[in-house]
Length: 114
Image (cartoon, rainbow, N blue to C red):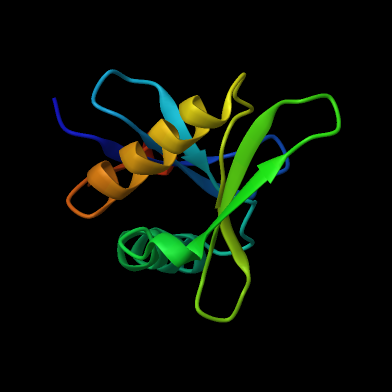
């Protein structure tokens, strides 16, 4: 099963996206956007930037957990991962984003919520 981007409205009324792997697990989540068009630009930015390994910022927390951010060309964070128990699990998450993002379909859930 292919990955997909879900575009949705959060509790504050902002538009967000999350990238899900083929198994349904969320592998990348965005910040809130005031405008849906900005959110869609974020999706396109993930498609492009996820293909460049240097755009992934690998992080380790003080308590020994791991996560990553995906950054745009301008350095802005366009998506963040969940927290992982190991560096290898985090790296698998990065590989999954790179694999799924480029051809993931977009499911617009904002229309259903209106």
